[in-house]
Image (spheres, rainbow, N blue to C red):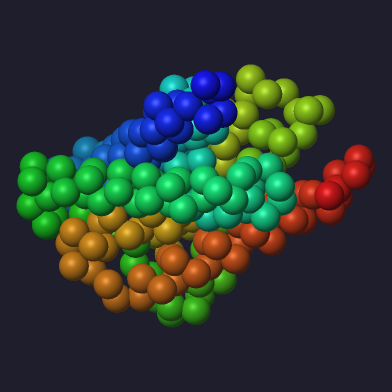
Length: 226
């Protein structure tokens, strides 16, 4: 049986997505929870750095196993641009979402329902947050497409570029929209904390942003875009 058809290899791929997304939510949302428990010890800058660093670490740790999507919106963007199999999209979404939910459950078990477990909430107008999440995910996916699908980019720097983009966007946009850019990252804390207000923003905007970001990079690259 080839690697492509070996069920164990498929399970290992999905497990890598589960583990990567688990650690993303456990670390990133955990930093938000701990910042509530110990004010001033982590700060907003520390939270942004945590999200960026954990994404970078998980890409290095699981990228060779699953591609380290860690994000249903990224998976959809890759699939629509023919860089990922449609047969795997639902298992990837399931693994990512379950990883986020499991991490939120652990955080609740450790600390209780502090800070809504890091759930993403708009600070002001919901539509303002929607537009911001759209653009954040658009540019995140644009960077991902550049470093993950274009052979002219420096592949070894992909994790640094993607993690740096996540950290940068969380740094300036986190106080306004939560800087989710990731439906799974928002679903986990929302489900376990019971915080469903304006969840639609973080389910819809990242998918639209990722799809348009992926197609935009495909359209401007100099070789055959499709």
